[in-house]
Every structure is written in structure tokens, then in C-alpha cells.
Image 1 (cartoon, helix red, strand yellow):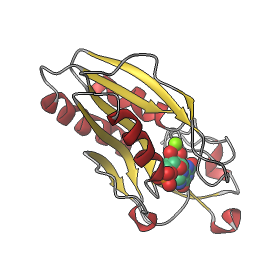
Image 2 (cartoon, protein in one colour; image 1 turned 60 degrees about the horizontal axis):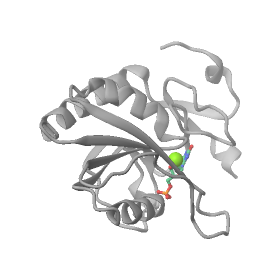
Image 3 (spheres, protein in one colour; image 1 turned 120 degrees about the horizontal axis):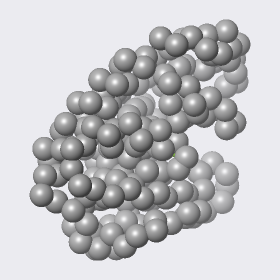
Image 4 (tube, protein in one colour; image 1 turned 90 degrees about the vertical axis):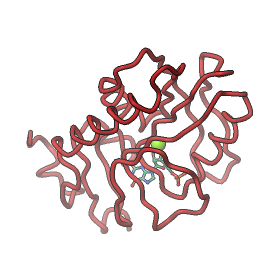
Length: 181
Ligand code: XMP
Ligand code: MG
């Protein structure tokens, strides 16, 4: 594993998913998506910003003609109503939409996104997530493709951040409890 800065970063406890683990997940999920969506008009939607890195890797394992689009919503926990900060650029009517997310936690983000997207008459809407932390689930969202179920720990890297940092790590790491308080 390329051992740059987090190995000695005081916030990081351990690596949860190595680059090799992630590559295997992307390859196997990509192959499944290729089979499942053959002959269908597929659009992959990444939720910004975290879902971007996983989308970039998994899309290169999907051997189909497809398009990419991006969406961002304001995060939960800020005390405000959730809203779309950046909407899709393209119309999804009649398309098969696959939402690509870094991590499903309470499920509230996806629950909201799925209800918005479903209202636009797509042919189908499904979810692909790298990580699934079910311990904190509030909204029951259907997950078609899941890389790994993880315990109730805060993670960074590979799109996931702590105050905006660490998204560019090529692996997923666990943040020390002391840091989270
Ligand atoms: P919900 O609770 O709506 O949250 O399913 C999903 C979003 O919250 C972010 N999130 C995290 N980000 N490390 C992160 O860097 C974490 O451990 C973590 N838990 C939740 C995540 O971006 C996801 O889109
Ligand atoms: Mg996110």
C-alpha cells in the first residue's frame, strides 16, 4: 500500500479497506452492473462530494454505454431542511438511474434523493454504495450493490472526509474515537 501521510496522521487509527480491497470491490460490482443493465439506458449519478471517487473507479469496470451525472444536497444535522444544492444536468425520464454513494449511514440522504429522483419518471432507480453502516440506519433504503458492511466507526478516505480533508486517500481508514469526541 502506498503509505503516504495518514500512516503517521494522529487522527487515523487503522486502515479498514486497502487499495487492493477497493479494486476488488469495484471490479466485482462493475461486472454485476454490466450484466444487470445490459441493453438498458443507464445513467450513473454520484452524490457529491463523497461519491465521486467511487464512481470514477466503478464506472471503468462497467462495460456498457452509459452517461454520468452529479448531484449534491445539503447535509443532515445542520438544523436546516435538506435541499438540493446541485441538481442533475440531464433529464432522467425513461432512464435507468444508479445512484453511487460512498457510505449509507442513517439512510436519510438517500431516502430523500430516491424520492426526488423517483418523481421524475425514470425507468428505474437503484443504489450502489461502497460502504454500508447499518448500526445507525433510520430510513430503510434498498441497496442493490454494496461493497462492504462496516461497524459503527467514523471513516475517511476514498471520497470520505473529516472537515473536508482526507478525500484523496486511496484507501478507507478509521478515525480515532478521541477525534470524534
Ligand atoms: P446518511 O446518514 O444520510 O449519511 O445516510 C450519508 C452521508 O453522510 C456522510 N457520512 C460520512 N462521511 N465518514 C465520512 O467521511 C463517515 O464515517 C460518514 N458517515 C456518514 C457521507 O458522506 C454520506 O454521504
Ligand atoms: Mg456523501
